[in-house]
Length: 250
Image 1 (cartoon, helix red, strand yellow):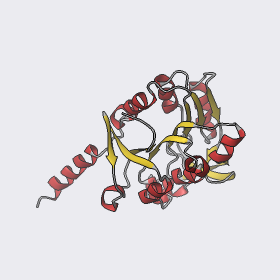
Image 2 (image 1 turned 90 degrees about the vertical axis):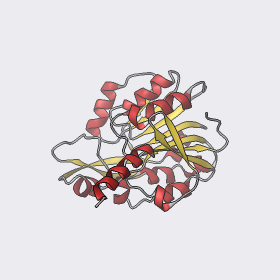
Image 3 (image 1 turned 120 degrees about the horizontal axis):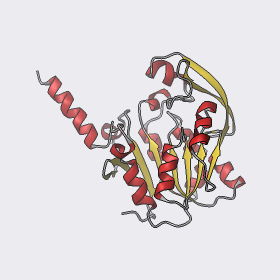
Image 4 (image 1 turned 90 degrees about the horizontal axis):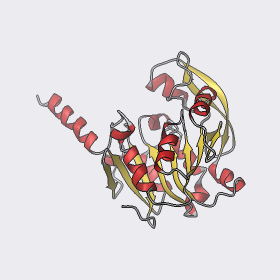
C-alpha cells in the first residue's frame, strides 16, 4: 500500500547520504571537497586516474594553482580531447590505464559512441549495465608504485580514481604507497560498475587501513565510522574519500 511512498523516501534518504548525487560536481560535493582539502597546502601532488576530458584535473588546478598533477587517461579518443582541454606546465598527461600490474588490457566502450565517459576495462559495464554493443581498444597498463618510483615521487597529496569498476585494482597497484603512508587522501567512486568487477565496499575498507572514510555531500561530507553491509554495500553512484588518520582536515 505504501510501496511508492517508501520508495520515494528511500531515494530521498540515499541523496542525504551522498548517494546518487550525480547531477554536477557541485551537487556531488567534489568542488567543495577539493577547495577545502587543498586550501593552504604546499607541495601538492595529485594523481587523477581516469581523467577523461579533464574536468576534475581543471578543478584541482583551480583549487591549487601550484599543484603538480599527473592525469592518466587510457582511451585514445578521450586522451586526444584531454590534450585539447588541458595545457599547463604543472600538468602531465599520460595515455595509459592504471591497475595492479604493468602490461596491457582491453578497454571497452560503446560501438556507437566511442570515447564516452563510461569506457571500462570490463565489457560487462557496456553490454549489461548500459545495454549496448561494445568496441574494444588495447591499452597500456601501469601501476602507481612503479610509476612513483620511476618519477621519484615520494608523497601524493590526493589520489583520485574514477575507472568504471577498476578502482580496487588501482589501489592494489599502489599498495606500497598506501602502506608507507605516502598518500594523504584517496577519492574514488563506488557504484554499479563494482558489480561488474565483483568488488565490495568491504574490499576498499580493508585495503586502506589507517584511513578514515567519508561520503561526499553537496556542502560537506559525512563520516562512515564503521563498516556495515547495510549502509556500505549500496551499488549506486557515490563519491567516497579516504583520508589518512594523521592528516589534519577540517
